Image (cartoon, rainbow, N blue to C red; front, side):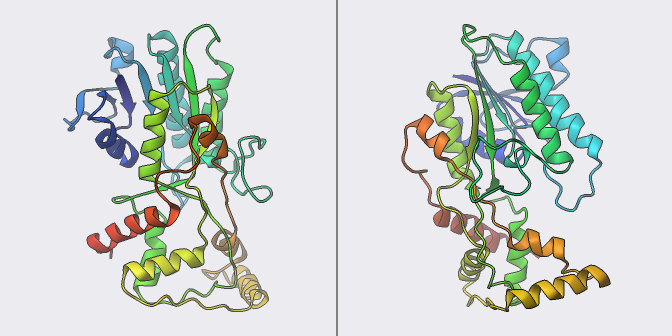
Length: 317
């Protein structure tokens, strides 16, 4: 098939290009346009208005402003990119001969914290902050302009949880450095569970969505099993050939220390403690049912081990 990938020079786009190039004809759409192995031609966003880009069967919209965990990005930037560019490429899709549109949203468009035990696609969206809010606005625009049932067009909105893989460090880098320095993990008494998504599973999902006739809709993407922070600390230690140092300090004492942190403006405060210890479990059952599979090809543990081994090779400091 002929496929147009926006944001192809990012982490997901680069991996997806490598994964798809042997079976499909790939075109790019990005703010930069250097030659890339596997890409026939890269268009600019300006090309959408000034000339007709290459005819394609499927458009995969990856381009976006990533979540800035340090909160240093202006809110307007998220809405200009995550909402504005999505409207632009989606309008182009509706007017084009392309039959399938796959939009990368985020679980953060649905919920900053999981209401209940597991997040499903049925949740009423309640994002917090400009990242999630800009993504849900993009989703809403797509849904408000859903193609007619007789148009032959399919629209898939994907909500992946935290994506990881070799070459992508993200938040895992902070925990990795913590363990690498031999600092004990003091929150072992909090047995939280968090869902992740390995880049291998994500690429597999995209390939399946391209090649199969899947019903239009919203689908969450996650590995099959969540991992606790304690498990992550252990896996990181193993990747460094170190013994995991996890301290099970009384939760009441930790929370009291966090309250003192609120008053004294210390690194450990109530808000940070909540983020470090809360669970965020994402269901992938709807997606697996649509694809007709029982399990993702890569297990949560093996996918994480592959990512962590790449950290060790790159020696992050």
